[in-house]
Image (cartoon, rainbow, N blue to C red; front, side):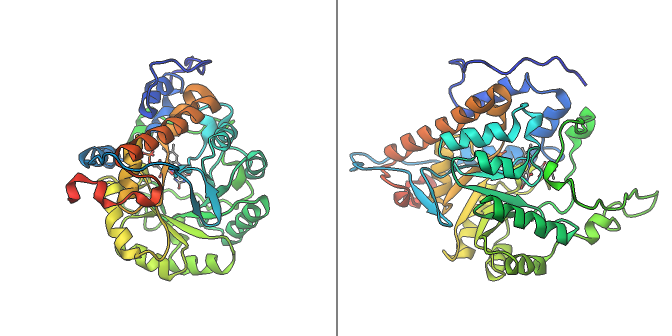
Length: 371
Ligand SMILES: Cc1cc2nc3c(=O)[nH]c(=O)nc-3n(C[C@H](O)[C@H](O)[C@H](O)COP(=O)(O)O)c2cc1C
Ligand SMILES: CC(C)CC(=O)C(=O)O
């Protein structure tokens, strides 16, 4: 692995004109193995690429001379007021990107009035992050093999003032992270999932030749099922969003089992490669949910136009993963703030040019393909 990377930017150069421009600046500031983790996707990264391409395939149609006086991008979700529908997706181990880690991201999200989901695998203390937050935070949870420990995490999130739980359900096992393997990535000693430190580790498991590597592993034996959603819902008053839903039948079942919201997501293409683009799965989920709970989405959101497309297809808000991490790696908190600012500004431009005064005005009529 190589080190001696460039230091974070001290000022944002004019060449950075959109969120995706941060990627090149981030790449040269992150150690090679960490970059393979932060930017990587499963196997051949086909789903990750598809997340971006699917947005590009959708066409908008502009509307002219609309009355846009008093326009805004405000919304409310689960009792949280947001100025705009661009949220920070849960991303683990942010100290790999920048020494200020999640604290920088929380600070920037607060300044930009963006919602943020803190990963269960954050590299900084979840209570400290909550103390520094200037806006509502949600906590992302995996149901851990140790259910008592999972409940302790929920209690900590409640006590610290997190306003919702985002239960990630699409990663009971690790995807094929080939790029991490090739780069020889492992976590450096100063980066760890600090909030999970007290968890009882599973016994080590190494499949012998001819033995099942996955089905026989203790991780899979302890993987959560639908009954665990009922169990979790019975143990907390926080709204629970299920993240990682792509199949309409799963969305319908999630609502019936007590989910308060759905995040349509393929985990940024990091779990099962060749899953469809999240934006392509969105309409089927929206139809299955039929307005019973809010539907959010993530995966491939890089432009304000992507955001209006997602909202036009029924999402209430979008979450953004890699661009935020690129901003963090390139320039710390100001980089994250800049990414969020550009996305919001582009969203507003796209709304004006499609004749939408508020988020409620954004519907399928602004999509060329559906006309
Ligand atoms: C480096 C990295 C770490 C991630 N860690 C988590 C995590 O801890 N929990 C989770 O639910 N999703 C995690 N995700 C997935 C994101 O929440 C999100 O679904 C995805 O990044 C969205 O796609 P995008 O990167 O194209 O915006 C991670 C994504 C990345 C890139
Ligand atoms: C530690 C990982 C499971 C976090 C994650 O969700 C990811 O890297 O995509």
